[in-house]
Every structure is written in C-alpha cells, then in structure tokens.
Length: 221
Image (cartoon, rainbow, N blue to C red):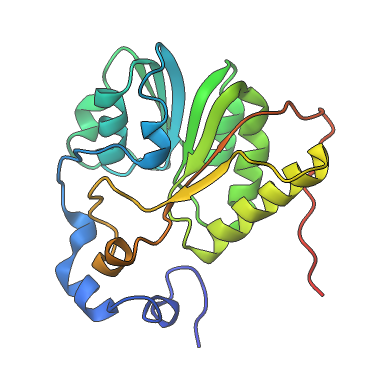
C-alpha cells in the first residue's frame, strides 16, 4: 500500500477522495475573502515585511497583500505563477518573487521578518530545514506558520520544532497555535471544513535561540 505524500490510501481515510477529485476544487481560482487565522493575528500591525513560500496562483498571497499593511512581501516558488492574480502580483514594486528551491531562497533573505508562511514542501525533513533556516531571521514577536497541518509530514515537523523549543526554554511553550482554515481555500476537502480540522498552524517567536541551536528529532522507540 502506498503511504507516500499524496497517497490516496491515506487520503481516503479522512474524506471522500473520489468526490474531491471529481470536484477539482483545488483548481478554483476564487478570490479569498477571509485571512487565515495565523495571518489574522497580524491585522493591527504596520509596515510588515514577510514571506510566503509555496504560492501557486497566489490566492493566499493576494489575500495577505490586500488585507495586511505590507511594506515588503517575498514570494517563493519553484514555478512562475500560472495565472492571475499571481502574474500581476509578482510585478508590484513591494513584492519580490524568488523562483527556485524554497530552502535555498529562504537562506538568501537577509532582513528581519515580521512573518513567514510556509506552504511549499509538506515533507518532514524539508519543512524542518526550512524552519531552522528562516527562524533566526524572524523578529522577536514575529510569526512563523504554515498550511496543511493535518499532513503527516507537516504535523511531524511542526511538533518536532515545538518540542525542541520546549526543551530549549525548559518549559511548555504557550506560543504555538492551530486552527481550521477559514479563508474558503478551494483546495481543502469539504469534510475538513465541516469537522473543523486544524489546517493552519503558527508560532509566535518569544525566545531568541542560540546560534548553535540544533533541532533534535523525536524519539522513535
């Protein structure tokens, strides 16, 4: 049985895969009207410098750009946006599109960041490396978060990161949050919205970590 990322064997345990594939919901080019819960926490902040990695057609990127006070927005993807609103968004003066591997591009950013939203790779090792690469560049009080928390690679990487923060500061962190996706994102199966599954995850940076900070993988046995 195929248990890799994108496996229908894993997906059908959680929703009606045939119905979802027939709907082709992920191809809907709809305007999002609500910010995701993580981004909603930034609405009162000004002159934000942030990153979204894994942009697709920029539906979420456009939502962020329109509804937050953005000073500079970095957008990262291995492909050019295939259609609007992405093709226009990446041409704006306060938007910088960085085409290439997300891990490489995150390392190239060299200014303090108010937020980073990770939605490119959903594989455990890649996401954990992304978090480690970009975390030092986030301002204290800034936000790191992402999408698809219900994916096994994402939940494993985020929880591994959380346990390492816990280990470093010596107490349970109260700065990790998880919520359902409220932005009418077309790629989410209807069952996820109906059940209120946590799809959006985020962490508010409360502690600076030492330069030699290492992320230890969780016990396995």
